[in-house]
Length: 368
Ligand code: SF4
Image (cartoon, rainbow, N blue to C red; front, side, top):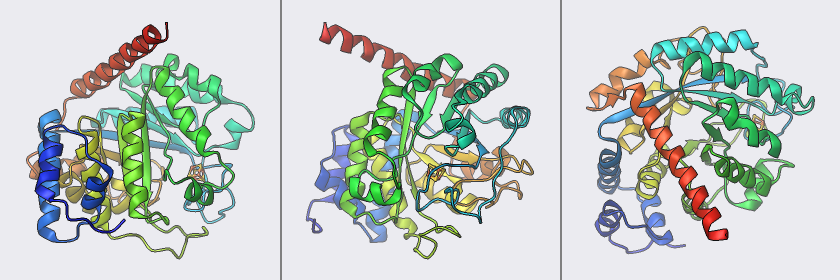
């Protein structure tokens, strides 16, 4: 698709009035380059964020509890055959201790993440995942997100009963051919269907994309619209960062302008949903720009000295303590934003989950 002559302010006014943007309108936004237009887009994204969330920002604690994985995603540091990546598997006690320290520091959610660890997937030991999710919920009384890869169907059905509120599963691209190249020997459809299954069974869902992995601008637009169609409750974008020991080790990271534009476009399209500013790409240095582009969740907070890794930047800013609530508070407040009270986040989660139940009931009524 070529650059189009659509009027930017007309597109932004349309988004601000709550109307849905079309493919070519989102495309126009993602191809902008001049500073003035970028600032116009970010300003509109901030206005929409303010309408739904006021000046409140949510914070997620990240517990990457196993870096073992049976898969070979080409972009990933933790792909099975990469002998350069640090491998660890935290014990239940260690995970609980970390979750408690995150809770005490003031995060709003515990994100329990792992690779598709063979000790769980091959050994069919999903009980350990459910048990730890349940214990974290009991101990912290915070909403829990699980990001464990593509779980078997019957395990997804049990997640909510175990205390999970969210199921995060990133497609990384919604271009099927590119997906096949990136997520070697994995099923595009199964990944999508598992998210829908989770949503149909009472969980909030998150999908996300990586930028700079061979996609075109059209693919980015398609991803944004697909996430809208899926009804994701959280939509994330991250810039690809090359990882030592992987097939993409020599690939370039894209200009950050592109990630900021996707964050803003996600806000214009998903409006009342959560859009993360991940500390995992550029650390604390990149937080201000991402919040200014319309993000409203700071993700990947990690306690210092916990021995935990990040996903794309495995050590960035962790032991310096910049990936803590204290570390991000100053940046948030300097932007005239505020860390939300934990009750506000819980209320948001509960309201969205109640809406899910109502929608489910609607579906049953229609089918009947
Ligand atoms: S992206 Fe996830 S599934 Fe793929 S190799 Fe990395 S940890 Fe495994």
